[in-house]
Image (cartoon, rainbow, N blue to C red):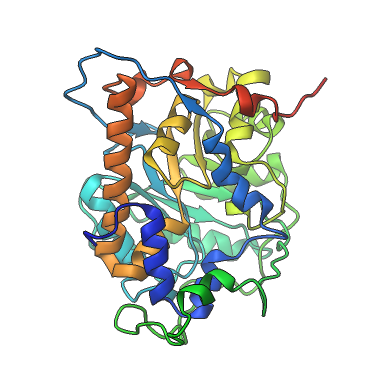
Length: 375
């Protein structure tokens, strides 16, 4: 892992290790992958404004997420069936998160149960649980009853951006990045990745995800079955952010996310939605914690999102790369890289605490021209 200097290196290493099925599962996105790529590109259009002579010998990365202290302004976004990448699975990610204090949101479609995932967690570790509401509500109610009994799980992350499946076209085509790495080496190294047969969702659904959800009925139903704080994941417009804020304090936070570009292509990156909120309904930031995910590959990306007002930044695909490339050690290396890059970026901006980052540390002029204009 010492030879992995950035997340691009980790992706290349994971691509060399993973079988085609697992690589496809992680790489795929909706349509022409425009949203997936824009998630990354938008950060490159935001420029930093470093300040000098600011005494930054010490730099503190701790912050809070809905009142819980975490060691990093980072969280693991929910990812399905990560045991496809490595047998350590979700429990391995949990172990890696413990080292630097990152929050782990457990997927509703995880390949290990929530109990297995948190079994070896440190006492101070923070987890969330992603919930897809099922057509048969009793299935979701049974899951909530289990989750409510796990003290390490501090919130329910209601994911609402995929009422119907998105369209992925990565079938027999689209494997060029994978095939380029494996040119002359047709089989991945099996010592790190494992055969993917037999990996499945630990808590399968019979009835399937519901497509009839609405704001009032869904949130009232959820509140009847859990007392845990509710985070809504999948907000992509300022209008929905405002509605979510209207349901505070029942709703404690929102995650701005286009699902890694996996649901509807040309949906906006989280940065666009966050700038929309700042422009049209800035009061939302006072009512809710706002988190973002999608496209983060550098510590500078993390810092830019924090400057825009995000409380924490989620990573998905890079965690699976780390797991596939080196198990727990690979995920630990992903967090180490991002933590080091985030800390050095803050210091070079003249900032010692996450809470001190703000809009005056960035130039968003280029991106502002792309933000929705409601006239």
